[in-house]
Image (cartoon, rainbow, N blue to C red; front, top):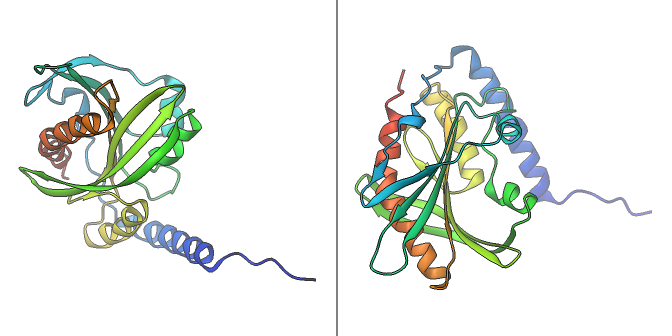
Length: 222
């Protein structure tokens, strides 16, 4: 009788997660808890993007996310052609030491909400606060398509990869005694101009908003 053993990569992943949890929990006694950032007061205008509407997160969704602060707001950019609308979502977590309050990856949440992944990858964006790498994610749902950019924002850096964010969590826990992080997600609906036009709009909004978001999250340094 042949025994079925887990693949080595799954064993490594499980081992890393256990090690991460143990190390973060060990450092928790000396963790510095930053004050919560004022996300509700985030800029009503970002460069040429103007606030269109605030979109309150439903109570059941907020309870599931377990974030300490949330921002959900749409912005509009009036151009010579069709106006572009970008939805900005930020979920900020003060601490991850207990393991049950962590950002939820859009690659898990969106399929669970009925969106089908079409393509994914990473792209680099040059901003006035430096170059960042973010996730590029195209999804579809009942004929609708959306271009999505997202990343994990800590006090010092923007991180694209889920595993990289977990690695930096351990580094920051030891070096800075902080485990706070935020998930930043930008969604632009795909219109008749096509997928790339939607991604170009999302990238433009990300370039304009990143320096302001970074400053907003840095302002809560203990």
